[in-house]
Image (cartoon, rainbow, N blue to C red; front, side, top):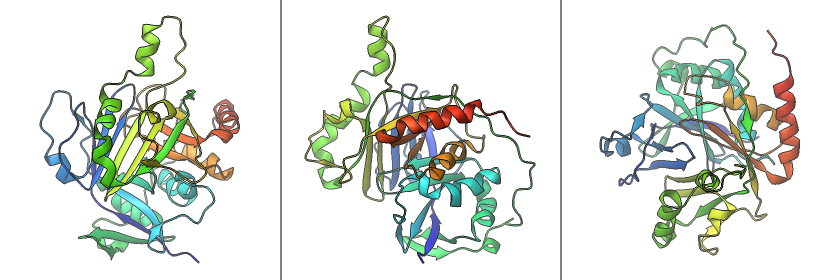
Length: 319
């Protein structure tokens, strides 16, 4: 039997229009048509200069990730958020814990508010051994070690809002990069993030053209590991021999969740998407941003995923 554990450390999230200059251990930058979302640790956040363009979600978030035998869990055929949908995402949704998801090439991080930590531990401790990372070491944590860790959330169950979804036509790649080669693509990276025209701008410059693609680019540097998510058009701007992906070279399609900015308080959004995918054993990467959520599923599964989500949105709400 695999040995499973949950570990966490500190981070916070914000939207920023500028490239941060600090070198922190937990850094993620995602570009969408609306804004840039930055997730970084407290040390990195302290180095950000005040700016009128900076909007901050004023909570401390703790990134959790599930590991098996001391390594990122990879025993399931499905990858990404799918493999933790039933064991982690669903229990937290049932206890009304809002989560902020960040899937990377290497693993999946579930960010929860620090104030919800006691509920998180009491919800997961029956199935997982829980550890806290302290000085690079994993220290066991018991429910009684956390102040106010008394009981699970006793709020009355609320039927989650079924949000509309958008499925753009872009094909996406989930890739990684040797950190030693990062300087050689830095100029391209900055150009793609900040100077390349977006599909929205292209559509605006061509009246009558349908907006069937969206600009989405995600770069993460966490504990020395780099993860990149970009569409195939952006991928062509990078040297092909530096970026690597899975041996299958799989392409992904996006499901964008939300007809208006989702905010940070609503619970169950990730579970609403990930649970049906898990039941069908469909892999999914999931990236939350300041305004909307984004799930990436294999291109070969996009038709069944579309049918599944459309059916979900036609079902009458149950009390």
